Image (cartoon, rainbow, N blue to C red):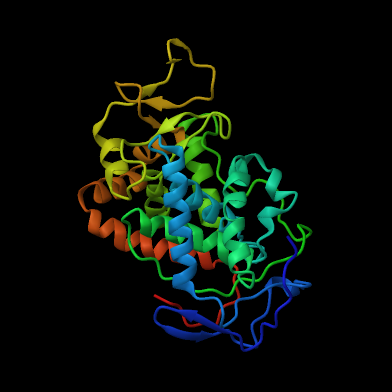
Amino acid sequence: MSVSAVAVAGAFISSENGIGMLSSSSSNQKGVVHAEASAPSPLVNMQKVKAAIGHLIEADAEKRNNGTSLKGTFVRLAWHCAGTYSQIEGDSGCEGGRMRFDPESKWGANAGLGKARDALEPIKAKFPLLSYADLYAVAGVTAIEESGGPSIPFRFGRIDDVNGENSPPDGRLPDADKGGSQRTIAHIRDIFYRIGMNDQEIVVLIGAHALGRCHTDASGYWGPWNYSENTMSNEYFRLLLEERWSPKISHNGKPWSGPNQYEDKTGMLMMLPSDIALLRDPDFRKYVELYAKDEDLLFQDFAKAFAKLLELGVPFPVTKPW
């Protein structure tokens, strides 16, 4: 689908709380030019976009009829769109919407996300002036809110690139396992510190594992983190602390041939090595314990961290929405 060319300077953006305006002086990272880029217009109403995404999630879940949904996948889509940012290089993030192009679309870390992008195409067709970058980000926001999670401060204004020429090198998104607890802990910090997150923000964002599940045909891992994979809660943290997690050695009566992961005593729930790493680092663990006890605090901190994540690398005016 081609991207509509729309003027950016002074463009007004509709939202539930009124009208915002993109600064005409906003510039792209490192002078990157977004040729034939799209931007929001007064015709793009955020609440209508969210409602359409909500209906899409609901209709897809009814069609699946197996207890799964697009919620967790849309959160992952938004996170992987934004998580390419580097405060060191001053580039990337969800600005540009480049994950729909090669090379990002083919990265191993983005395996399975093509289905999520394809699922959103009817929304893009309904709101053609909405950029893909805004669409991917607001899909994650809507998924959180539709799951009973906190309201996420959010604004439109991301501009699409028309190809993947400005994509960063592969390797900026997190791996689930680096071959040992200490290496995995160091990797988690390397990834999140690069985008400007601290230990508390790292833990609260990983709490999004409350939603969705892993699929062997995407990441190679299998299973959900809890029994309520369509509901945002602090259950992920509670289970991480309270259950006994053992290396997975079998699946459906056969030896497990997938990557190293952990399972509870029933074999129905899973944790990744990167999840278990949160327990083995004292600075991470203290936040796991905090959020396991206080869901309200989890929601409050998650809303701030997720909003921050989605704006990384986007040349908004200085004033923040939270």
